Image 1 (tube, rainbow, N blue to C red):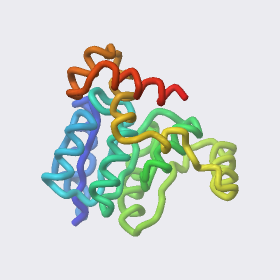
Image 2 (cartoon, rainbow, N blue to C red; image 1 turned 90 degrees about the vertical axis):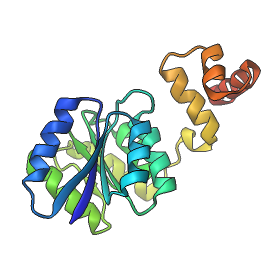
Image 3 (cartoon, one colour; image 1 turned 30 degrees about the vertical axis):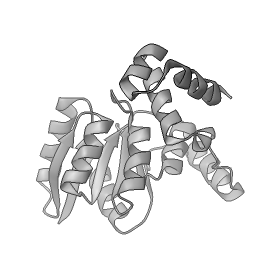
Length: 193
């Protein structure tokens, strides 16, 4: 039985995915999360084999959630379910350690196939992506151009970046993380470089 965690900020999406996957004999949905932080907690609590992760979620986006889960639970496979067909989005998740990337306009059998595929330790990239995106990604992979500017950031800097993206001020970030405003400003300066 393949144990799956669903992480999406829309309840109706999670419910639809749960209904779809519950009809599959070898897949069991063990938990749901509505943001990246909950996904990390649920991954720790339920130890799923696969996480189906949305990109755009509050409190901690799917990219940072993926990065942290891959570090904490290297045997858990993550499939990103996103509306973004842009090469850069896909490459960011591959760099972060995602095993699969599926567009939200994919058909149900694509998701089931993706879950089974990543369980065999293979990558799964949505077959409905435009051929030029796939070709460009393969070129980047072969040329070794997968280095992301985000990879040079520390975990704390990524955390500050996430809170900046959520619209928090330096003062609120400092309070939330238990650090000084000056430290937040230093992190912000390094992020911008």
